[in-house]
Length: 121
Length: 105
Image (cartoon, rainbow over the protein chains, first blue to last red):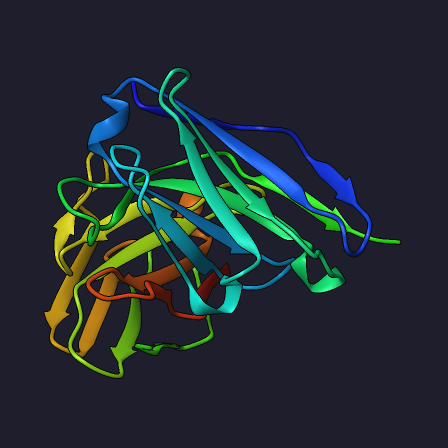
């Protein structure tokens, strides 16, 4: 069965970087785009960007341009999202979500369990 | 950026009642609906405005096209009390509505 399993919770200081991983299984890794979405405490869902695990191309939301880097490791079927220059407003649960193929414009059919990132001095 | 506006913000209903949730887009979109329960990841309910995702009970239905969409839950079950989000996935950036909370009256 399709699974996306994310890394554990993180606590970071302002100005630091965080890397969240998303290990996939149960499907052909290179055939489906993966999105990253975050949710601040008590707030709604915010799309951060997308990565094509096949060619490593990315598209980031303008809000995160220059601070976010999405990568993939085909040897372990894992996606990574790194966010730098953290501030308190980045405290949120971060989700990876698979886009239903083909193409990059599709709904999100499977989600990781979420990773809480807390930014605090 | 496409803006999605959901209404109402909160819907207070009793089990067995019908729930009608609205999502309006600032321009024509491709639309999905997700359910989220506390402490859980969102779950896909509806895609293409009206197609139920795998395993979703038929009490959930979606309708609409263009800029106006509706999610209907025909008879609320206890497990349906949650927050519901609409999402457009046809253009970048993908965007979500602010959510509608369906709570027990």
